[in-house]
Figure 1 (cartoon, rainbow, N blue to C red):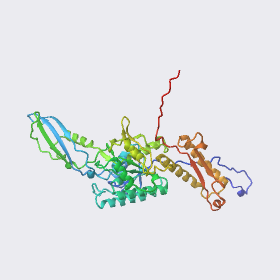
Figure 2 (figure 1 turned 90 degrees about the vertical axis):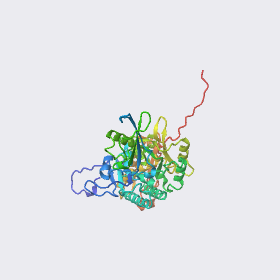
Figure 3 (figure 1 turned 30 degrees about the horizontal axis):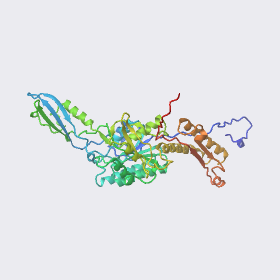
Figure 4 (figure 1 turned 30 degrees about the vertical axis):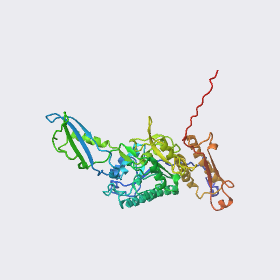
Length: 495
């Protein structure tokens, strides 16, 4: 606005007056950050990326900057059964593949696999924080003193994240392979960071006994007692069980460790002498290419178990984009998986969902006729009525961060009625748009939210004298219909 007191020379002056209040631009809601070990961390110009939050847009970006997965060092045994005629000609053949790789023999450095699972489930641009390379350690981060090294690395990556403003979801897939105490400490630090900054949310994996030595209930109880943080639970959600994915193991360069046994029988069932001795998949000259391809195809069918957090992050991003952050990221299919690694029935689900001590765990279930679905929408703080649901917590994060950034322009403005009107109008316009999108309840805006600011409403004279402008915002956020009751009754036929 033109300052009239500065006019000295006679003439005509133009004064343009803003007719509309400033606006609030909604911040991004689905921007995960993945923290973990990578094969490398370097740009094409050989600039190091270790502990440097780096934004990527695709799996190809990840591979170019951070490399591939760690080659599996587990020994496998493959049996080739052949039926031959009297001349030794192969009439038929079949391949017996090994059972899934034992859990304690698989690589624990799963970032490359996790990123593939994330993008396969609707993920978009995300951040990567590489905390170091594989160090030739397999399974690595659970063996002896190496676990403390891994904890310190992952903790350092989490601390680097604190300075980044854009990420809104924290995912640490390798955390489940730490010792229980380090696992709790790392997840607790992530929740503390989310509570401090109030602009991000933590997706946790529940530690699981992969050998099925414990029941589902025992795994969940172990998480609720010794295996889960105690504070700031409303800023995170936990998921269970691991997912048997269709992602291929990396056996590159490990052909010599795939033992091959060749069994040859005649049509009458008697043994036939092998045409040659085969010891492993690296015996190129002894195994025909077509048979080698069949073995490799069978190896690709071995399910790769992964913690669910990466897939869930993709579901969050996909739901935010298609519906909005206010829509619960549940009743959504999970892609790239054969199914959950544990069967969860209704009794298990009830125990996971509702508990006297809080700490709900959201299951991924296979439901007959419907597929593999995320079947839970609760935060860890499920006994807190205000923050029971993920969508409510994340919607408030979204509104709080958006309004906070828009309000910075009013810092040091006159703390008077003119400024108060502008601030209230700016926030009301933004919340009206959220109400129209379906994020707030109520048949009209005044039933959905209120914005209060002013002397005698939210501020005292002392507040004004001390430069405090206090704005109070109330919102009636929508909540998911978690329990749908269909009530039927019989009625008398009407004449």
